[in-house]
Length: 438
Image 1: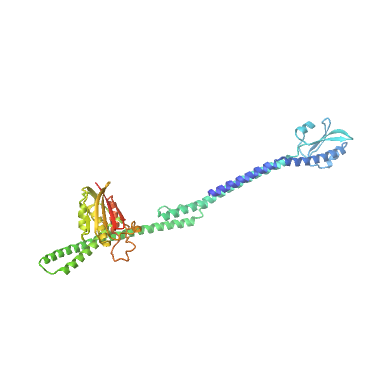
Image 2 (image 1 turned 60 degrees about the vertical axis):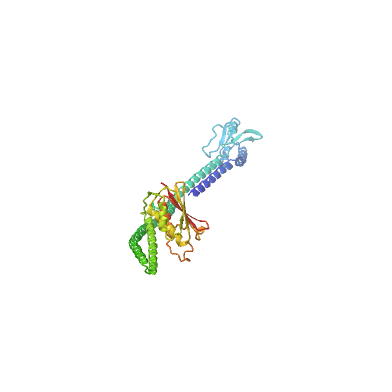
């Protein structure tokens, strides 16, 4: 609409400029000169006829000269005047004719001056009237066209452009996922049928989204419920396995051969432990999706981190440095889950010595966990903490995994107002935990 308004304004500026040019050009003296030359010829003809009929001027009535003129003698007495119009020379004299620029001629009869013939105007009146009317007509026409163009533009803007912009804006909101705002429709909108269809589509999409969200919530609640229910039998399996292992150890003391049974019980325990970790991670992920995941922070001594490492380092691959004696603010159970996931991940993909060192870094206790495995490619480093991400080479390997371990670890650290930072320096993978100090 802005472009249309500019076009109309420019067009009518040019139009009125052309009218002004016409007015200026037609007012130049060239037109006046041509008209006056014609008047002089007419005046000469009239003067000649008056001289020929000086003694009987009424004979001039038989000729239509097309102009108003008066014949006077040398004493300014009117001897003859035309009756072509109501226009009349009120003061007839040569001096008045000169003053008003009336054309006049001296009359000579028998080589003797007898009077004058004077035309009643300068011969330009008709031309000036036509010129004035033409200019006024052009101005009125221009204003009329401008008004019509303006009204037409307003009609186009209201009936086409504004509804189209509203539909465009509405489509953008739909694309952004805003399905709650209806599309307003005006009376006389030529896009009315489309607008109504678009709004019906919005309502259907909104209802579909609500159904999808409700279904997703039910699915997550189901997974959460199943995860919780699975924890009970898994715990039972682990406890039973531990009890049997204790009995086998007692049998070993009696020199009974139980090596094969003990190995199988170890395998059962490891598989149950893997299932336990997987179910815990899945349960935490679902709670996070539902917005119901909570942490309970408390002040703990830093040495609890060493205890957690010992708990999950069942292969005795972790080598820890001394830890500063400070208070940290964590959820102990969730912190145990974080460190357990990282060590488990290192066991699975590296299987090497794990170096763990600590230092104070501003308002955090920095815990650096470094294995010496193949590490992670630079382009995948920012992805390893993404949900369900397992790397490009995962399908080619024989490693089991859900892609939740490091995701859960990172999410839990953020919940505890800390941070997890992965890096790879060519000598394995380094996971740095920034644990808030009290």
